[in-house]
Length: 121
Image (cartoon, rainbow, N blue to C red):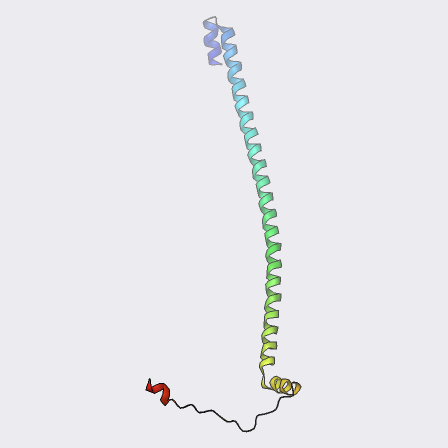
């Protein structure tokens, strides 16, 4: 408004009106530009948030599946350890001996080797 009164004194009203319109338009343009940028930023951040939340949920399901597999393998491992211990037991060996029709040895004879020949060299 001050520029308008100064321009009126100098008989330069048209130029002052152009400058005033330009400055008003520039402010409106920069204000709308800021609003548009803010909207774009909010949209981008919203999309990133949804993508990250989706990724975390997917990873959670995958982790749960892996934990279930680990627990099942742990149980299988324990069962196999128990089964291996049963197969090594004396009772099982006796059953296998009878199934193969093996007999206890009677008297065992040992071969004695004279070490004097080896010592002489």
